[in-house]
Every structure is written in C-alpha cells, then in structure tokens.
Amino acid sequence: MLQQVVNGIIIGSLYALIAVGLTMVYGILRILHIAHAAVFVSGAYLGLLVYTYTQSLILALILAAVGCSIFGWLIQRFLYTPLLTEARIVPLIASVGLFILCEDLFRLLGGPYIRAFKVDLWFDKLIFFDTVVTAHQCLIVIGTAACLVSVYFLINRTKLGLAWQATAQDMDTAKAMGINIKQVINFNFIIASSIAAIAGVLTAINYNSVLPTMGSVPAYKMFAIVVLGGLGSIPGTIAAGLIIGMAETIMSAYFGFIMPRDAIAFSAMILILIFRPQGLFGKGV
Amino acid sequence: MTPILRIEDLSKSFGGVKALKTVSLDVGHNEILGLIGPNGAGKTTLFNCVCGVFPPESGRVLLKNKDITRQPTHRIAHLGIGRTFQIVKPFKNLSLERNILASLCKDRTKGLSPIMFGTGLKKHRQEVLRLLNLVGLEEYIDQTPMTLPLGHQKRMEISRALALHPKLLMLDEPFAGLSQEDITPLLQVIKNLRSEGLSILLIEHNIPYVMELCDRLVVLNFGEVLCEGTCEDVQSDSRVIEAYLGS
Image 1: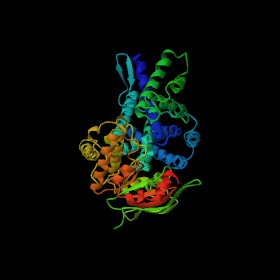
Image 2: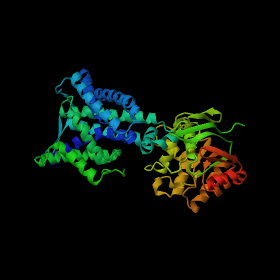
Image 3: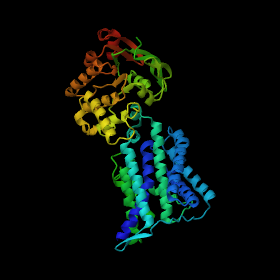
Image 4: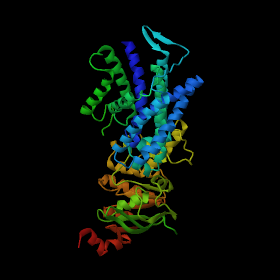
C-alpha cells in the first residue's frame, strides 16, 4: 500500500508541474493553453539532446527550461496576443492546431520511435521497510518541490509576482494602477514554460522514454486537473495533481478492472463539472 | 500658470453613438473640478479617454503640458493620474496591504526592492501604512477588501490611487451608494487631500457634496459641455435645470 502511495505522489507531482503552467496562463489570459503540452514535449527532447552531448543533468534541465521559455514566449507573442481580441474559442482552436503541428514536427525531427532517456544517479534506490523509492523518484520529488517553492516565492514575494496576482484578478484595474501588462504576460509564459520543460525532462527520466506523442495524454489530462483544482488557482492545481496521481495509481493497482487508468481523471472532471463547477478549491466563477 | 490637466476638443463615439463631442476643459492647480450631468452624458467615457482605457477619435489630453493622448493606460498612471471606479474594483483576494503594494509596483526609483523580503518588506509596509493613514484605514491593513463596508472599499481605492503619487486624482462617483456615516469621513479625506496640494477631478451626482467640495463645475449633456463656472453660476443656469428635469 505504502508503495502505491509513493508511486502516486511521483505521478501526481509530475501532473501538478505540467498543470501549474496551464493554470497560470488561464489565470492571466483566460486562454486554454493546449499547446502547453507541446512545450512540455519539447522540454523532454531538448533535455535529452543536451544530456546526450554533455552527460550533465543540471545543464539539461537548465537549457531545456531556457529553450522552452523562449518557445512559450513565442507562442504568446505570435499566436495568442494577436488573437486576444477574438472570441475565446479562436485562441483555443489555434492552440490545438499548434499542438498537432508540433507533434508532427517532433515526429519529423526526433523520429517516430521511442528514445531512451537513461540517467544514472549516484545511488540506485532507497528502501524503507519494504517500500522502494528509486533515485529517479527522489529526483522527481526534489525537482517538483524546488519548482513549486520557486513559484510560490516569485508570486508572493516579488513585485512582479504581485503584479501577476493583481492582473489575474482584474486586468483593467491593474493597468489603471500602473502595472505593465505586457511584462506580466511575458513573466507568466516564461515561468509556466520553464516549469513545463522541467516536467518534460523529469517525466522522460521517470519512464526512460521520449516520444513524439508523449504530450497527447497530458494535453487533455492536465485540463481535468486544472478543472478539478479550480481554474486559475495554483494551490488548487497542485492539490488536484496529487489527488489525480494518487487516485490513478491506487485505483489501477487495486481496482484495475473497473476502468482504464486514463479514464479516472476525466471521470473526476465530469463529476466536478456537474456538482462543483468552480472546482474543489476555486472561489466561484 | 498651465493647468494640471487640459482636455482639448476630445471626441469619442461607440458605433453610431457620439459619446463625446469636442469636449474641452481644464483642471487647475490644487483645484477640485466637479463633472456633473445626467446619466449617459459621457462623464465616465471622458474619464476612460483620459486614462487611456480607449483612445479618443480626435482631440488631445495634456497633463502638465505633456501630451498623454493615446499613451497606454499604465504609462498614464506612471505619469501621474490616479483614479477610482464608479463600481469599486478592489483586488478581491489580496489584503489591503497587497492591494496598495500592487500600485507601488511601478516605483523603481524610490529604493523599494524588487524582492519583498525582510527589510524590503518592512519598508514597503511603512509606505502602505502611510497611504492607508491618509484615508483612515491603517487598522485594516491585513484584511481583504470584501470583508469591509463599501465606504471603506472606496477609501481603499483612493489610497491605492495615491500610491501612484499622482498629480491628478480622478474620482468616479465616490459618494454613490454610501450611507451617511461613510460619507462624512470620505468628505474629510477629499478635503485633506486638496489641502495637501492635490488636484482632483470628480464625477458626482450628489449635488450637496459637489457644492461643498468643488471650486468649479463643468456640466456635460449628450456628450457636450453644456456650461461651466462656479457652483453658484451653474446652479442658477436655466439650461442645467432643463437638462436635468426636462423643459
């Protein structure tokens, strides 16, 4: 049982990392950023590329984050900003289109097969009683915690973070109070995309695989998580990521015959939309 | 002496509706100018054009002789126009302290650090306390706006606008919807601000308070300046009575 809890936390942390960026983008621009999953996959590819050449995991994480920040910023600048005045469905469709385009680009550039992402850490696994925590799982927990603490610090302890919060609550008022919205949006995409990159690298290491379609399930599952947590709520998203990760692991370990693993998040989303549309932690729509 | 704010021939339409037709007015130094007129006369539209919420079709807005027409909203705020809203718009989930800090975000020159931690945070808090003290709300610094009565929220908005160190304060119906016990302190706050040298442009429907506060009045009707002058002049002008009551 404890083993399943550990596995659940690992999966949940990865979900939370991917979904945090999505909720940040929604919080500011009210756009459902499907292409975030493409940023996530490009993070995995970039990380693998850097790791293959340098054998340095730190460098792989940093360069993936930098590369994806630029990618995320480009999406914001050249896809979303021109479409902001359109109906909200328009940037959503554009985002889906970009995601499909990117999936095929990854197939062309990376090859239509699974590449291994094998990282050797200085220890192999820790064993508490009969629960095994692999070194990779430790890495994921530490990486996730570091990212989430950094986001918390940035949002709550810096001027730019405060400007971000104000903008998320009321963009027009924020402007009238002298907040430069463009700066806030840039900051938003840079943070969200670098976290997605780190999530991509960590996910790839966890499954020891990088493949062009590794973003397709997260692309839609992270929505279920964001809806569960309450659109735009960062703490809610993190909690929801952990809940879904845990539920999936435990359900498929003990009740695997009821429904396939990936159905759980979406069932949860449907239930939430019926009974509590503002999400578990949302404050109303 | 050049006025703080000069509006020259400002026009704006929405579709076929001409919301503003070549409106001109001046707000002098240390003056409270009242902007009155029936509903739909274009008062809030004028505010929004001045603040850059939407660009005017023609005309100019000058702040201390500097042309600010068509500047982005946040630039205009930096240049020295602070405003409040007809329907209060606090940042609902942030404490009063962080509401006001959000306005101070622009302040890169005054030694307020980009990272708010330790001494940096203490310094910020002192500045916020000073600003809340101006409107008599320092005891509520850690509460969120929605836990406070409307009158307090309106004063909080004034304090948040003052965080911009404005040259001109624009108040959009500050007294609307307030009870008497909220009105008295608000009147005092506005009087104090004027005695400290601030210039104020005020939209208001409550004529007794307008008379008490304003040095001059401008009356808008159907997007045009109907008349302007001292409170007494405007009060006795037959066109104003007609605009409000019909002929």
